[in-house]
Length: 112
Length: 304
Image (tube, rainbow over all chains, first blue to last red; front, top):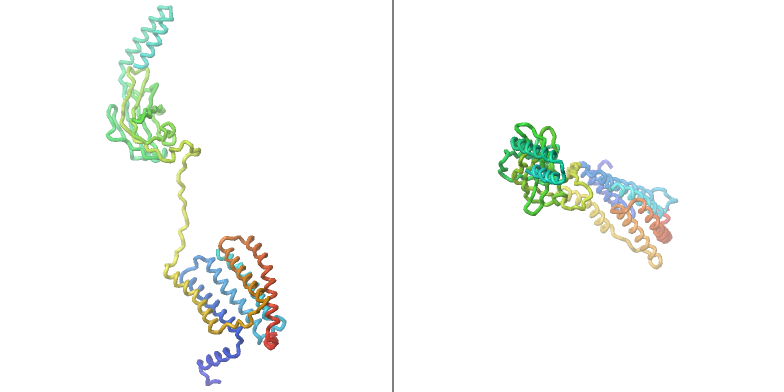
């Protein structure tokens, strides 16, 4: 194991991810990357250019962070490796939709 | 002369009626004495000036002062801008002493037929009148023109009333004042002080960041394409309708939230949302329970 370089670790991780992770989780991961990057760019704008208009920045950032957290929760519930025996995927997805609805009502309230 | 002639007329009337000759003799003596007094005085107008200023309060500091000696004329026409005021001041001296004349006025007349005589007010041995557009608008019918200014002073002590044409003044009535129907006085324009707007980034930076923020969505779309869609489990038959209606309901809720951002209030939005949630829940329950039941047993066991 000690002989493995950084590149080899990444390759192994990638292969493992590609073969063992279900398609559903890959989609969720893709969406997580999307929200994460958007949040990073919004924050970068705030740092580099300025906070004006602050409410719009808050709305965008809360939307990104909120979405990310909710999607992570969905991923945890959907992942077969975790023991959520009583909660089906459909139930998790319905919860996810409902939480997103509430989150975005708040976000659009901030948007001004 | 006017006064004397008036007295004469009155006296002749009295004469005809009065039978007492003695009384008529006294009257004649009185007239002669009066005439002699009037003729012996020299009356002049002194310190005539017109001051033009923006308001009554600022007249004292105004530099627009037009002065003219008695008997002469103003070298040029006095222009009084609209919404400004002008103060006409003069003194009447009789034998170098201030005279409180019985009549002291200014007359303004134009070629168009407007002819207004304004009485002067007397204070501290001088006559003055402050001409403000607001006050004279009705009498002058808000008619902007060049008016000839005359000073008229008459008194029983004067043998001849003074009628001195000073010159011309230009009156410029503002357009608003021309409306006789205006019920309220014209107010000064209120100039508001607004907050200095926040510093904005340049258009290039804004556009660049808009593109940057939208870029991850392209990654998402391309990633989806790379992973590949699997629509094989999309329901058919009646459930297809439920599924489509569920997607449509979610879209409607999204549009409602966007509409809330654009124009609606929270109360109205929640009311519409309550209505929209009924079909969403119904179709959602139908669709998701179908998908749950249809899932291959192997996966189901894995998941649960």
